[in-house]
Every structure is written in C-alpha cells, then in structure tokens.
Amino acid sequence: FHAAMACGKPRVLDADALNLLAGTGMPLRADDIVTPHPGEAARLLGCAIADVQRDRFGAAAALQQRVGCAVVLKGAGSLVQAAAQPPAVICAGNPGMAVGGMGDLLTGCIAALLAQGFAPRDAAIAGALLHAGAGDAAAREAGERGLLPSYLLSSQGDRMLMANSVEGLFPFLDHRLIAFANALHPRYKMRVLREKHLLRETMRADLPPSILKRHKQPY
Image 1 (cartoon, rainbow, N blue to C red):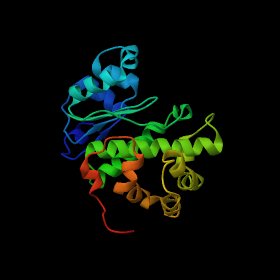
Image 2 (cartoon, rainbow, N blue to C red):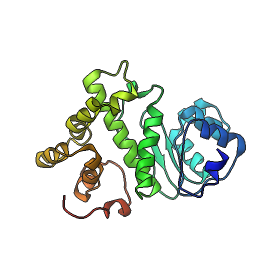
Image 3 (tube, helix red, strand yellow):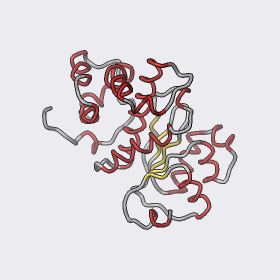
C-alpha cells in the first residue's frame, strides 16, 4: 500500500486500499479515483452506512471533498463525483451485480481507461457505464440470479456485450451505428462510444469536451 501511494502515478483505489486509506488518512492525488461501496464510503466519512444511503448525492460530494479526487459511489444508480463538476448517474446495472468480484471488474475497467490517458472523471464515467452495460447484457442472457463476474469476461460475455448491450444501453442509436458497433472487436468498442455524435445521444451524463475530442479519425 505504501509503495503504491508513493508511486507518483494515477491510481484507482478499491476494497482494502480504501480501508487502509480510512485508517491512515494519507493524501491522494487529484488524478486518483476511489470506488467505494456504501460501507467503504461510510468508513472514509466516519458515519453510518444508513447516512450514506439516505443522501447518496451528499455523501458522494462529501467524500470527494474528503479525498480530493474523483469518486465512484457504487450502488443502485452509481454516482460519479469529481471536483467542481455535477454528479453523473450511471443509468444501467442490475441487482445481480451485487456479488463479490464485480467491484474488481469495475476497477479494472476504470484503470484501463485511466492508463489510456482518459481524464479521471471521464475514465470513471465511461468505465462504470461499460461495466454496468456488460452486467445488463449478461443478465439478459443468464438471468440476474447467480450472476458471476466471469460471465462479463468470458468469450460468451464478450459476445453478449457486443450483441446486446449497445442496444440495451443506447436504444436511440441509428440502426446503422448499432450494426457498426456490434461488428467491432470488443477492444475497439470504446473508440465507437467516444464518438461525439454517439455520446451526445446516449451517455446520459454531462461529459466534458476532453473525451469528445479524442480519436477523431474515421474507423
């Protein structure tokens, strides 16, 4: 933990890293991201879980002030809160995703985007949305009961993500754009979702211009 905190690189903190953070009070960088569930958020804020759940928007804002970086407050309607920005609500996901390991997958999604050069808030929103959309795709195929994180990662999960979640997450897309997105390998999916005309129609979050300016070349 101390080596990671001293690395001088952007980080995504989850699980026991948040527990250690609550215990040590070590400062974070502005380009870090924390991804607490309500219990971890309560420990960081020194309050009860019920207090977090009673006012999730207020808790996300208080936590952002406490840690000084972008926050993803997980739960039904996960919230992304960054400094001097309105909160973003992730309008996807399902109760079947409330199982061990789903948070690890979310952390990986966000960390991958952060490593690609996304601004922290952009990485948090896009990663949380893709994670939730993959969970919805898996639930449509296998059902919410017994849903496992591996269903989102397996080759079957990749097919479900590409075949289903574009329509499920973004029902207003032109059918030609849906067909185009579905034809791509999963690793190119984010490039499609970053396109300005798609984001304006579908993301349901106030993304800043930095994400809209990336990858303008034709595909």
